[in-house]
Amino acid sequence: DAGITQSPRHKVTETGTPVTLRCHQTENHRYMYWYRQDPGHGLRLIHYSYGVKDTDKGEVSDGYSVSRSKTEDFLLTLESATSSQTSVYFCAITHGQTNYGYTFGSGTRLTVV
Amino acid sequence: AQKVTQAQTEISVVEKEDVTLDCVYETRDTTYYLFWYKQPPSGELVFLIRRNSFDEQNEISGRYSWNFQKSTSSFNFTITASQVVDSAVYFCALSEDRDRFYFGTGTSLTVIP
Figure (cartoon, one colour):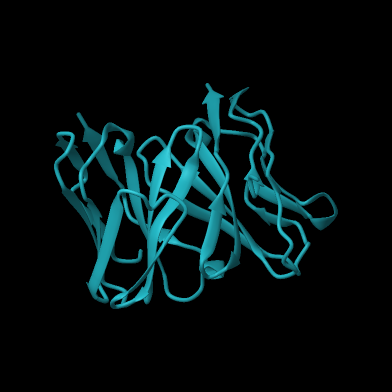
């Protein structure tokens, strides 16, 4: 299996606090993605990265920022968490273009209270 | 407009029955890729199949089969002789280029013993 890990696996935080989720890969893949999964919406793209310091917004990027200072790490930050950001967050990687398909991390369940 | 539609939100079948999960997609590209992923109760996302737009041959893998029809923009997934372990949420996805990977909202399959 591809080496991709997400941390933490579960987190409860209070409204208004910043939160950072980490995605770490050991595959040296260039492309990394952050998705959120919500009932009735499937998976929606938040941000993605083509390489170090090369990131772009997805369809639901408001309230989120990302950073990629190393190939292996892609960080997702909720600048000021809101209850609407309660979700399951998945990181994904692909060695080439998305048409090769993703390998997903195990997910982070975030609850904002 | 939804690029990938999975009209069946929930399906229940009795073990050993056959079941087909529907997926309809929308794209103007001539080159694109379609995928199915499985999400068992444990939560991880597992790759099942990738199909490119130039290959309309049906695919069979054990009890799983996929029917790709460009004429109807459909990529349906059939499980033959369903088993309890098939209970999961199944996602269909479309990739047009490296930036975009669109997921359907998922179909939750319950196989009753």
